[in-house]
Length: 392
Image (cartoon, rainbow, N blue to C red; front, top):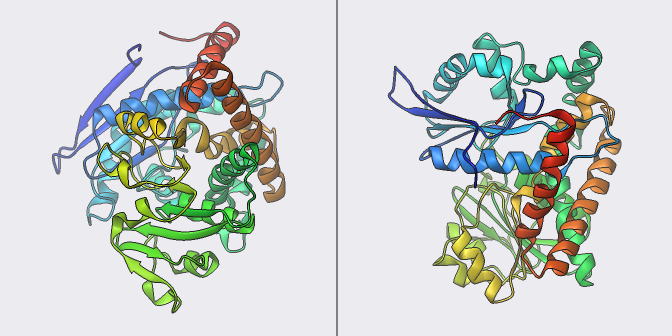
């Protein structure tokens, strides 16, 4: 495994807290990857995420499209986003990273940070935009920026389009796996860890496809109902960090310990919160047939090997949660317009094709879906490098 192009550790002069930036690869001088904030964030974690972004970009490469894949990168800050000083820490981090954001790193929301918070902090740090490094690659910068800005104003049933497209992609990944296995959507049960941006949208799209979300977990614990939760009632009862106000629960809903989602009687588990949620110990409690990684790196490799040995299929993050990143670029480059139906349709087509390709490759090679996704990315990276160049 090759080393990243650049790895940087920053120490905040006010609090002593650390932040990280890893640029795994540049394509035409630019990389793409979100900025996360969580207590315990490490350089190794950010390095793995940056490598994953390189693969996500490659997996969505379409030589006929306007969207030109970028390189992979990631930022991380070791701080609880609920800390009273978290926002000012974010501003100081972005001020320190300003030369990279201006020149070669496009970023946006990730775990612990919403896009509006990133945008506000970026402006305070003196940046034009968190994605300004890509502007020189655009044919018509003014039109592209208007198109993306307009897309961010679109709401569907009270939730922003930018918060929904990622979950649409996760849900389509689930539905593709079910369809290939001949499992009907109706009656299939799902447990979701995390009801933030990604988890909440995933739960909405899956319930609207006929599946039953029987458990959701947040920082306060797990909410469960074997008959299915009322997802539409839970979504508006969330705070900014995805924590559900328990006043919204129905009489049949039960409150269980935080890790109860792991052992929920469900066919599909969707970890959509933190990294490293499934380890070698707690994986033994899982009875689901599929784990669909809406979060980044939620299943440890050793745990995945044990799960695979007993017939549990893990659909990897590098494919499953790639829809949000791709939607940004499809919109900015002009493959789609600032319209919800167009965005959902394009996301569904692209994700279904990608998941189908991954599962076919896994079956043909006799490997896991993750190994198949990595192989597809490995096939595409030299093609992208030959067409656009790369800096190693």
